[in-house]
Amino acid sequence: MRKQSESAREAERSRDVQAAQLRPGSRRSFIDRLIGTGIGGIVLSALYPVVQFLIPPATRESAKASVALSLAAEDVASNTGTIFKFGSQPGILVRMPDGELRAFSAVCTHLGCTVQYRSDLRHIWCACHNGHFDLNGVNVGGPPPRPLDRYGVHVLEGRISVSRDL
Ligand code: FES
Image 1 (cartoon, rainbow, N blue to C red):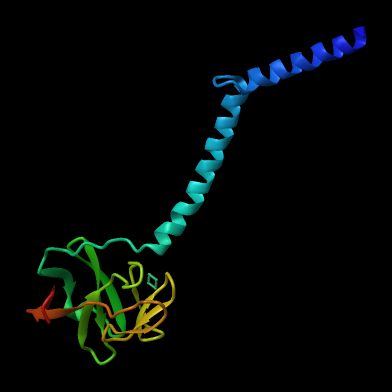
Image 2 (tube, rainbow, N blue to C red; image 1 turned 180 degrees about the vertical axis):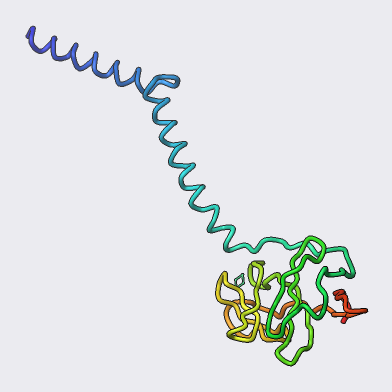
């Protein structure tokens, strides 16, 4: 009989300790919240880049209508591409193998990476997801959904300027 009452008291004490640990503001409740917050933070930090990849960044158009490049036309070699700044966006100036100069927006139409000229392929390429554009700026391979915007190129007294109108 005495043994039974001792074990009943022991069980009651154990329940009291557990109840105290689960009470709001207790150490155990604090640790549970800390772990929950940590797991939530890990899940959010893993999801953020995935969402960034799936939702393309908004690209703002430069307000500038034209830009003078610091390049002399004679310094641009055949079968090369040069990145330049058109307002806040990159552009690419390409010297065609036949000598003609062409310019395009260098913002890939897929997810906005900066494209580059590949002299080995003789076309414009985006390294991010292997997007390909021909020398008219037309998307010819990979995920880009539309052509690059084309710009006009003007050479006056050996100096190059690029404008939005062709
Ligand atoms: Fe250019 Fe994806 S951003 S191919």
